[in-house]
Image 1: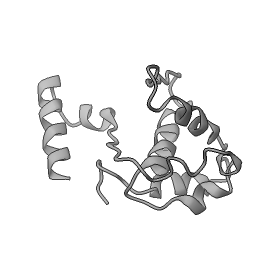
Image 2: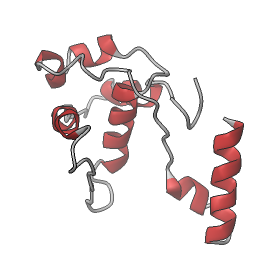
Image 3: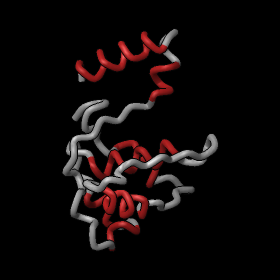
Length: 122
């Protein structure tokens, strides 16, 4: 599908094929539990190089309507969980890496304008 709107699972699939891959797919189980609740926000704050982008790519691959990732997640820990299929590839997802936009603009206003343009184009 798109780059920002409903992206595919290619990024996460490449990570899964890495020799140093660590399965953190049970984060999906927790995320599924809080969908449609009052406490439906998650803050993932970790130091640099601790897997925040990897986790974001995993959530995109799982929730995005732009892909079919059942086979990808079937062999991971989440694949054996009760809620595995409940939200799999059933949501519209917008995936933005703000650092990509910050590094190519000179101000917050310019960055926000670029984000708007790119999402609308996508």
